[in-house]
Amino acid sequence: MVKYYALAGAVALISTTAAQASIVSGQFSGTIAAPTTTTSPGMVHSGDGESVFRWGTPSGPATEVEVGNSASLAVSTTNFSHNVLRNGDFQLGTITWDNQSNWHPGGTWSSVMTLNLDFDTPNDLGSISHDLTFSSVNTTDNYADTDRNEQTGNNPDDLGGIVLSSSAFNVPLDLGEGLTLESVFFQLDDAGTPGTPWNGTGPFLSFNGAASQYDPATGLWRMREGGTAVIGVYGTISTVPLPAGMWLLLAGLGGIATFGRRARHQAGS
Image 1 (cartoon, rainbow, N blue to C red):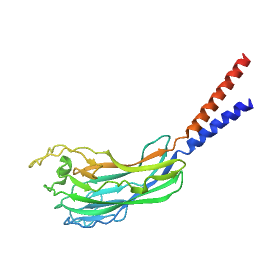
Image 2: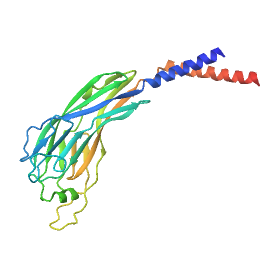
Image 3: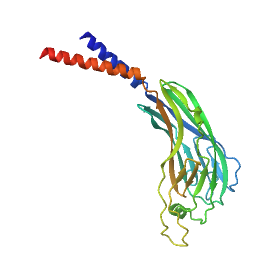
Image 4: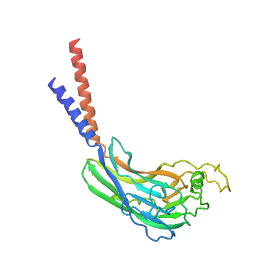
């Protein structure tokens, strides 16, 4: 009886140790720098060095861009926690683009998005950052009625360079306790809704019914006017399997425990 409980306890201890080593937690965040190489006449921006960056052409008497008269790019601060039982992809955070239409003559600008990963467990690795240089191409609004542009989805804009290098965040990165961050990548989680034909009066503009599109290979993110889309930031995490000898030991311990139960059952019958 004592041997049986000792074996069962060993099996439970090994299993519990393996499960405890599979929690990955931390925080994802980011900031967006002031734009450079701007060729967008009349463009005004706000949120330099913050997690939400806005740009556009203020309407009416306004002199600053804000919610309602601007497009925005936001890096959401996200606390993540995943129980990694096997190799897989796990979401670390999100990036959201809201492409509100505003009257402007088009143009381009570039900026730097700084993304941060701060792992707390298994080991506290501190903040690991990656700078991503991207560019914006704003098309010329063909009609001053921004409501029409947003309803139809005309004049899509582009963000280029939204791609992660293979070495971003120092991958492969040892997270501790047999876990490794193999890669970090983007994928389009929410493409938003497509535009619909304009039902108002006046000349009808060419209809662009597409929602957002994203190519992870080139980093080109295209968004219709009036659309909102979300890119998910994912990490591929691998686990170090138990050595073959350990699995044999577990199988042996399990067999002995089963044999012990049968022996006790037969003795009591």
